[in-house]
Length: 223
Image (cartoon, rainbow, N blue to C red; front, side, top):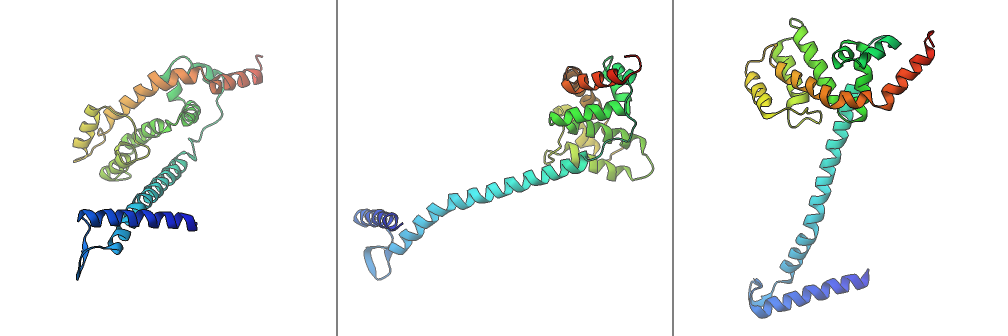
C-alpha cells in the first residue's frame, strides 16, 4: 500500500513539474509561476473516482430495474386460469389447430407455461388482458383499463412490452387519446398471429406437450 502511494505521489509531482515548466498549470495567488498542488490533487481524485462512482450508480440502477421486472413478472404469472385437468381427447385436439388450443382453458394454461420457459409469456398475458378488456364493458371505466394495458404491455418502458410493428403501435397511440373497446384489436390479432406462427409449432414439438400426451395416454382406459 505504501509503495503504491509513493508511486502515485511521484507521478503527480512529475505532472506538476511538467505543467509548471510549460506554464500551463494554474498559479497560486501571490506566487506566480508556481503550480497548484491542491488543484492537481483534486483533478486526479476527480478523474480517478468519477468513472468508478458512475459505474456503481449505473449498476445499481440496472439491478434495481431487473429486480422490479422480475417481481412484476412473478406477480403476473403466479396464477393461471382455473380449469380442470385436460383430457386425452382435448390434448389431441390441440395438435389440430392453434384455434382449438386457445379455445380450451387447459390448453391456454399449458401453452402459457411453455411460453414462460421461452421468456415470451407476456404475449399470452396481453392477449388475455385484451379478451377481458373487450368483454368487461361496464365494471370499470374504459379509459382506466386501457391505460393499465398500455402501461403493462405497450409502453417501451415496460419489462413486459410485446412486439408490435410501427403501424399498430402508432394506431394505439392515436386511439389512447379517446380509448374504446376496439383500441387494442389490431394489436391483439397481431400477437395472436405471432404466437400461432412462431411459438405454437415449437410447443407441438416440445417435450412438454409430448410428455403430457404420453402421460394421459398411459392413464387412459383405452391403453
